[in-house]
Image (cartoon, rainbow, N blue to C red; front, top):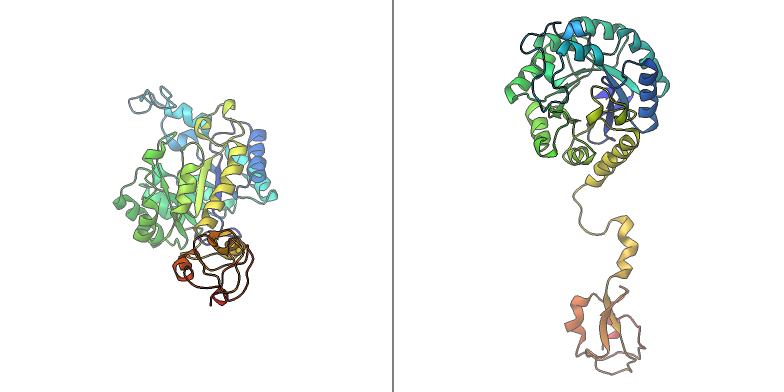
Length: 347
């Protein structure tokens, strides 16, 4: 599939998305700095989230509307308050997208309701992302698919049946370019819970490209995912975790993003193809293998034995496997120590 001018697939450099989310900390200047830092450190795209607190939830404190899990990063927070803090004001979208375009980055967003889809469509976004929590919102998926733009769908928490429902909904509503992302919807996620061996299985099951939406710390899981065929990596991104923010604790900093971009491309290149024997770059190294050499001066007619023939470096003589064929033969000519043993040296 393509987003903007970039082809995304296993034969191409992994497409890296820097997810801004709420890491702008309600400052447009900071949001623009995040765009600049993403571009400077190798990202292909910046992604936003398009919602308001009112399009996400109700402003109540009834059970379920306050996060009660004590292990959560947002324990005790009211959902409405959290979404107010994390949302990207809609009038910021255009300047952020314009800054991204000026920096050579794609910029698109996750809509969370139909009004967000219409708004993003008016801005001419190149693609849409469906968040993991919205994968069961089939009307939203059909609305996005009807735009005809490429769709990226995160699959955190989703069963195979739920993913199948989403894929069918998208395709039936007109989506021709669809990518699924393996995702673990915990924040941060642990490597042992990511199950990235699902990536090739997901590709085969649903017949589309698959990437990784990664909430783990570091780049190890992303590198492993690319080795399994992931062609897109999405990571939350901030200028500095110490600055705080709703998603800062599991977001990458600029130097980490730069390393990630380099390492996932190294991983893709390292896959290569099934190959045995020396590669072109290894040909010169063959000279440093062991091979058979005359180790003491011999005269024509002398008998070769283990005192005057040895397997040493370099590798210009017969391979060591022929030692038994050399021992007991006579020298066809005088040969000083350091002469490579060849068939022509044997009488």
